[in-house]
Length: 462
Image (cartoon, rainbow, N blue to C red; front, top):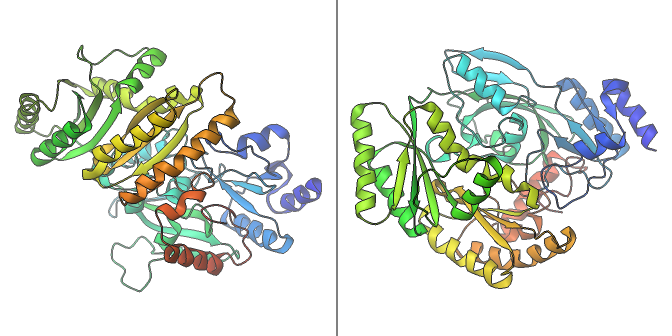
């Protein structure tokens, strides 16, 4: 049956664009989630919108499911094919198609790497601001499908804020062209925003029109040591009151120790804090730098900050960013159980303290690593697997404690997934962030765009 299916797919894309060998199935059948084992039937590499439409129509006719695959850097299992699905990999659809300097817009295919778009913008004297640690391998289509956030949301917003138009192939094979790059368009429902964050469950994004911005001037980074997260909130408020903050991140001392040991990085200063805040701002004038130093000194005087250091050039700024950006890669070898959660910014200290107490009390032998985008309320809880504990048992135990964690998320009016989507991993907990009425509406939309349920079925909800 697998050979027959591969032959049908090859009629659309060509025999050299279909893979059924074991290595390809394992690589393309999963994302960074380590909870699920991949089991796809085949991998197909379309090269055009027409081929994607033909694949979707074939899936409807032969009744098999499709799973979209971009850079596979997600952490919720949204790109996992565990039940014999056909994986649609967008690696070949990786071209920048058009650019308008006047509109400050670029048209690109979904397989364009995030860093590729960032570099293209830079070459044009512009800036694509959505950024995260996986920008060197994640794809724009996947970024939009999960409404990716990253490290500069506090200043520039989410991926959603930069999508000016898109072409999407729905679950019936119909091609929709949405918004046409318009800044203003008051003609009823803006369907773009249904597909942004839909994780490929309503349709496959096959072309995007993305907005670009003015590049920041002399981005400067300040790292501060703090004793507690309440102090971090005071620091955030103080800096936002005086500067246009581009990023406000945090990480724990435990996270810093792992990064220094794994990457050979140096401690930014001698003082050891419980947590660290990383602040980026544009050094546009001497007055801005004076204001930054004044706020820093005020934070130290108030006891909110223990110590700090500020970059003097772009090389130092990048080195300081590595203390935060290298955490995910560093701890990946420990098979971490990740929770990507968010609450309102003002609620972060109390929420984090409560969740930390839950995990520490139930699993005192597990190491807990905290970091995240505290300036927009998004924190990453990482529980590291002990070497002697089997993976399946570790994930089982973490899954049990997740119910208590998400009880706290619900109590604080937060989200069980801030920027990695729902996928498979967060599906059992969707009701902690969405009401029955909301979920019913989402299922109704699924039926409209994908009546035969061929588009990434089983993700977000059953």
